[in-house]
Picture 1 (cartoon, rainbow, N blue to C red):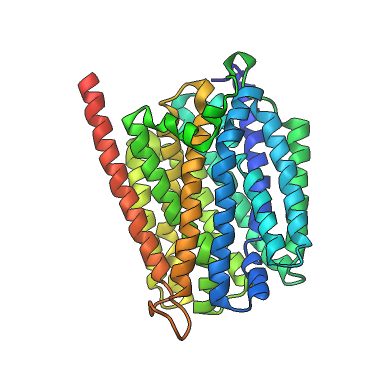
Picture 2 (cartoon, helix red, strand yellow):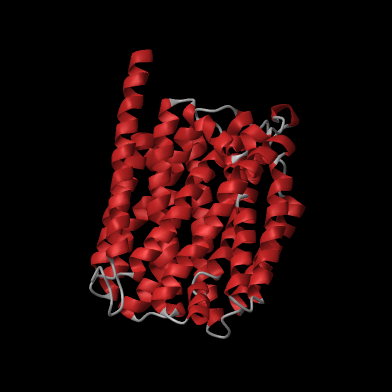
Amino acid sequence: MSSLSPSHRKAAIAFIVVTAALDILAMGIIIPVLPALIEGFVGSNADAGWWNGIFVAIWALMQFVASPVIGSLSDRYGRRPVILLSTAGLAVDWVLMAVAPNLWWLAVGRILGGLTSASFTVVYAYMADITPPEQRARGYGLIGAAFSGGFVLGPVIGGLVGTIDPRAPFWAAAAMSGIAFLYGWLILPESLAPEHRMAFRWHRANPFGAMALLRRHQELTGLAAVNFLLHFAHHVFSAVFVLYAGYRFGWGPWQVGILLALVGTLDMIVQGVVVGPAVKRFGDRGVMIFGLFAGALGIALMGAAVDGLMFTLAMLPNALWGLAMPTLQSLMTRRVSSSEQGQLQGANMSVASVAGVASPLFFGWIYSISVGDAAIFPHPGAALFIAAGVLLAAALAGWVTARRAERDEDASG
């Protein structure tokens, strides 16, 4: 852990949380308008679902390739320069997408966006550097709350600005990334001391080499499976959420932006306020499993909703899903050394990226055959029901992993 004093540690936590919030704010701004922009290029709602899934998969594939490299680079050169370089790259990406004249230009933007957004691995490693193990769930909860805070304001701003011009939110996102870069350049301190740095090695920095770290411990392998299923289910939102809300309830960018702001607010409360006390009372494992079960219930209720009110109310149990990620991250970081935190986060992001490649393609395809006159599955919520089942499987996998870990701890004790 970093040797920062308590006052400097609190300041560093504040700096990284604000930096993360600004980055995710930029990403949230484009959510309400990107599917509509794609639909304008391809000509139909069903085709937009498929192409939006492809774009999310491209973004995730780039993260799969880049995350372990970026994580290992941060283990070698420190967290700060990697975060700054990636944030500057995001600003360039939003400008490219703002002027995109066709679908293929957007694809190039998604490639660059996936490469630069891989810096999120370093944000988590940064938090591991500056917090003791028993406080990491709360620290990761604060990062999650920062992400949610960005999604509270981002979609609202994007929905509002998007009513003026569908390209304007991309320019706004570029401005937000530029602000994040300047903020980090002027204020963000380095968290990884030189004596804790590790030499860069390609055998660790490639995705498959990085994931070898997960195989060293049986519990890490089980938790990685939970991580995969969690992200696979979560990408149903990026693939079909906006299109589903527009098709089922007739909502446009403004209504979707408001709903996503509600989702972000609830998630911010859960991760920023509830995680810490819940972990203190029930422990990381119990809170993780409960969050996964609650998320499965919430997604199933969203798929079953017959009107906009029921769909909105389903966000309440779904928000408890936010308990799972910080506790899962906390459990995993306890099992590696400080010099391997970047590699661990790169491996985690690679696992998440595999899910991110397969999931949007799958859910985009499911959605495309669930709507319209030629629908094979005669229910537009089919993708949401399947995602609920995947999240339920994650909860069960987490339960099995937790039981095994408890038996191992009892045996060693």
